Length: 389
Image (tube, rainbow, N blue to C red):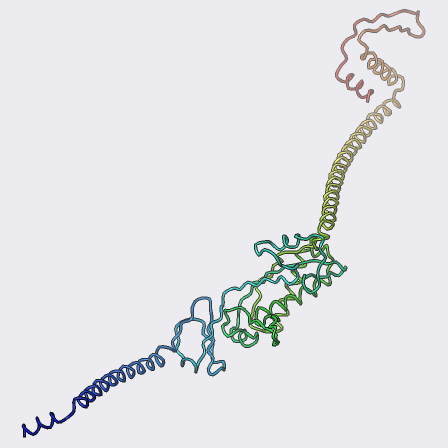
């Protein structure tokens, strides 16, 4: 038998033996590849079912889960698992404060991006505004102004925000740009939540500005003008109910057109000078009025004091006169002589050196010389001062 087997192998051609060995090697390779692909597919299925559906809600964001395009739930924090895509779609919406700048009412911004809006507006101070290109506002007194606004807002309801505002597929990206369907592919604008908020703010600014005077919008009552726009803007945002809260609205810039800016500045400067002079005049009037009031109070006080003093003196003299009158009625001659002597003493006391010529009725005439009279008494001095007053 061994001899026959050996003869059988020797009878097989060499080409057939080489082909058989190649097939065995190919089958072995295919078997290894099959096992590898099987393991890979099983691993991918395990990752798809167990790992792909896990997600974490990062700080300052909210996550919306859609299942076959239908809203399911909103997650605010932590780790979660949902059936992975295409069953579920995860949308991340920022929950921190967002900033939006609205420059619709400023002049054309062509030129260097590093220039401020005012510098761009002043590049061609004599250039007229171009409708449809240069933004502007018309006030209630038919003047043209430019304004720029900054909005600070927060997403309060992620579901309403995503479903009501035509939010892009990734809410963290800018609003979607729209182009015309013709061959030119002209840019028509954007759509999305920021575009909607910008439109609402522009509408509020137009309404309020149309009811304002130009000086109130630019200089005198710019704060009140901003408050009115803010109140109307918040109301309109609340009315559309898109899940957004307006935190603040700021007037970033306001100015007249560049061509008439100098004239507005002259008017403003004149108004400021007028106000300054009025303030100075008012201060002076207040100062003069206060000084007059003080002087009037002083004069009244002195008059009252003088009145009291005079009344007191008159009353004392009345008492004195009544006493003299009573004594006079009792003994007229004695009182008259006494009063005469007192009066003469008071008069003579005021003279340092004097000569007195005196005579007594019914007697021989004589001359009396009185030198260096005695010093007046305290009562005499008081009488002399009283006589002077």
